[in-house]
Length: 107
Image 1 (cartoon, one colour):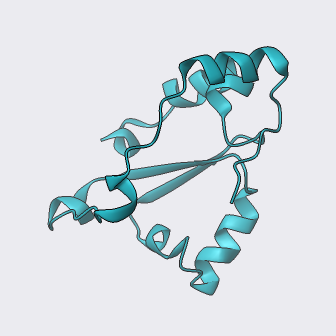
Image 2: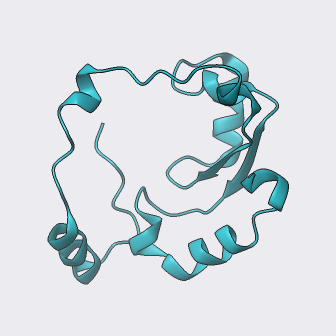
């Protein structure tokens, strides 16, 4: 389950490595629990990078467990074709997308 490094040259990989921190172990062992109604009420946005948006929509429709949570009406989707690390591979286009998020999607 390695994350795509598409769009990252050696400079971006070096910068990423220099800023990286280990993932806390409890994120693997302690499930996140969000209580209702906040969990359902908040608008959500997925910016697809590693998967094309059409593929994400197919996975949602098929009930794939990685994408099942994205089936709710509170979800909006945008696509930014690059690898898993858009903040390093395409920081300008990512910033533009985030600045243009409709206020209802941003909360």
